Image: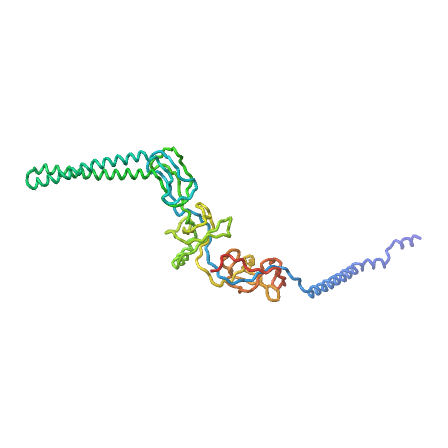
Length: 397
């Protein structure tokens, strides 16, 4: 009985054998599953290769050939072509202001009137002094003539004759002095009527009727001539040789635009190149003159300035947004006739109003992608949603 119990407690030989071969079965099962997965993946890859690639929607534009101005752009400030500060040359009470602040005035217009009565009396006194001395001079001339006759006949002493001649010369000089005093008095009377020395727009009036004005005192008003106006601007000294060379060939056109209204351009001409480069900034000061007949440009205003040196003929231009930057440099995606794209390296040049000149790498008439480049790779097929032209800036001459 005990022997039977002991025999029942021992593990069977078949059970040990099954446990020994269990890892082998798991390994074979895993291998079968892996082969099935690889087979399915291979089938999936074959199906993917067999499926045609999807088209990518993009926007495109055609490279255009046009004449492009070579321009230097910067920021400038407007100044009046002439500015005059009005001050009184004489003292007196201000009796009249003959214009309104901010009014356009013509040259010679009376602006202020200083009380002229004291100066009218000064003119009258100078006239009286001149008349008195002219009478005395006439009498001295007669005396000198008579004494000259007597002197030739030796009927009068030489010393007495010399005294008569001296008196006549004194009166002659007195009359000249009276004439100068009369001219000064008349000039002072004329200064009572303060007129505009130039045509232009008046500024703030700093005096009032009834004020006592001092001679050569504070500014009463200023006048700015704003038709034409000048625009001052600076450019790096490296551009000076080109500016001078093109300026020798003819007038260089300049254009000014307001920051809030870039579409409307005011035309002008380069009129001044400074005689020295600023050593602190390495720039050269230039000045352009603008007719400003519409008075859009105002003294003290900041404007965008474009100085045109020359015009490049038949340049290839594309929208600037078509140009991408890669590890090898700038490039564009060119759409081929079969609607696939290729990555084309280019050499971009000047940019003008949203368009860029292509120096090398592209021909006029080729189509470039302008929107949707992030999804593209060379050889991708595209569907062009919109086709446009490069944005045109200044019209070709």
